[in-house]
Length: 127
Image (cartoon, rainbow, N blue to C red; front, side, top):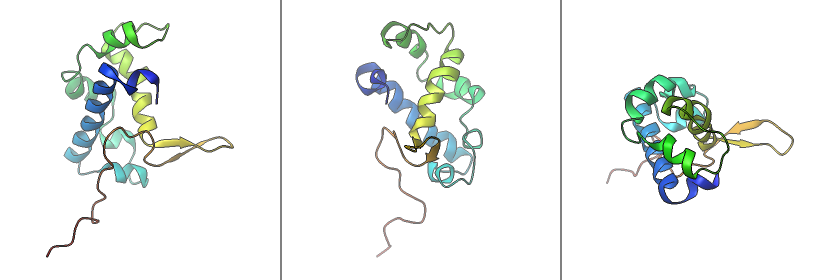
């Protein structure tokens, strides 16, 4: 995971984003496991610029400004939506992808910043 997102305000942003992914997926009847197991796309999960601007931006409205000032990149993002599209969307992608040594990617729980979400149907048995 990019260094910026590993501590401080960056860690709060990435944690908030992961909680958001869980919430928008649940509203659509999905879990992150549906994506990992190829039953839906990230867009079907709810990870779109439009949905993020509507529901994630209010949770982290100045994240692009903080990233511009502390992210270590020479690129400056003029808007939250631009930052989401080019930077945060990429981080979300790597929540669920790893690279094969020979090239290409595969879906898995990769740079997920929270506890591993429980798989549906794998809960504790009722007593």
